[in-house]
Image (tube, rainbow, N blue to C red; front, side, top):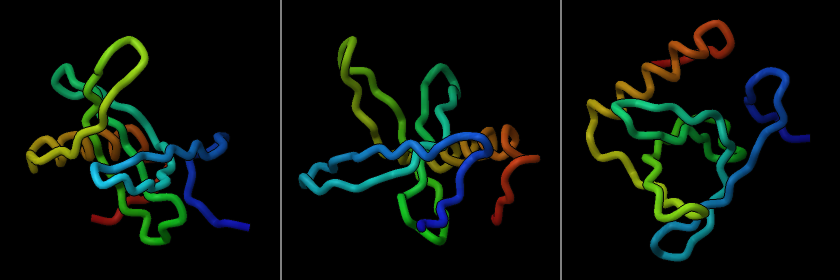
Length: 96
């Protein structure tokens, strides 16, 4: 049995993302948050015992497709992470 950190009352949703080199990586979906009119996907690598959070910007391509972009701006990363921590402060424990 796997011991994945997950939000209460929810089954883990696993997303498989393919990087620019064609390599697939599985992530556990945690949330989707809006910051400055952009949406950000909050993920955790599946099976990662360190529970490192990954934040990707959602870039709509068309009605059915979207790209996920690495967030380069440190201030944006911190702001989105702070929103996530605030939303789940009574549910999850965070280490900074």
